Length: 433
Image (cartoon, rainbow, N blue to C red; front, side):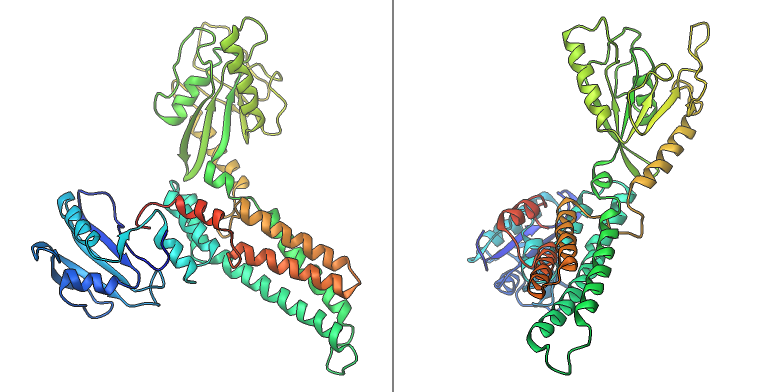
């Protein structure tokens, strides 16, 4: 990645489409736009121009062009946009013309957003929110990503950072000017109380549900003995044939995972091999072992076996399935959370509503910011440093604790960063973003 180079890329969807948007960012963006459009348009006003190949002067397209002089742009650099007709040939021709201009190169994945971060147009938490927004598939994921990308967490972290700085200043004043009249009385006690209050506030944020469940989905495992109706129920919840349904015991031999959105909430439904102690051959035994691992990692277990025979799990739901079957011996559960027929649909809506309601208690509230693993770790380091500082009576050690807390918050926002981490984050973006 060449620092300071001017980059370009298709930033809209893959052609063919009604429109195609090519973005150009960097010190030579204005040169490139002039080369294609003849002259720079008025800043921030769309202008209709003939785009010509600088080498052959052939017309490439008649398009809208926009010019955004830096640094007040999305990337913090000079930025141009070409709004083309969205045919493949048009896009290829314009990209080829740009490639022929000296100083320009095709952008790498996530490079536009990375430049916005490096130029101070967004912090790392906002960039992570934008990444989540690009991959959002459910309404809950979209809402959470919008809050993160809009800076809700960043503003909260910045407020915590200002409080840490204020407390640090009080400690430094007590260290350096304890004999002066303008130092507040009982500063040591006041700082200790302030540190405790701030640590308590951060502890509350750490106790909230994390973003992993929101991103990966609430894990619901369907478990029970062979022929209990697990695969039929999975297909009914998905409203498609994802698992083979057969009366032959042991048909499902491996874990089958299928993502689905129910009520705007992401779920991962897992059909497992029938659990039995005897009669399972080698391959089926491997499937049973994997089923037990899936149950251990589940948020909810739908148990379709005999009442009371289910695995030990804090969220095991007794499900009486196949209630439509007649003339076949079927155990009636005394305390079933749900009674249903996946074949006829009876009771299915009630089960789904219960799953959605339970998932809402496991996910961050819509008005809260969900921390990802990196943010949670760093905020935890901040809280640990604050609790350590609160317990100290030695002012030098208390000052060091506050410094460590501030450093953790700086890392969270990306004010101190590691290149490998940035490569991993922005490398997951698409080209042109």
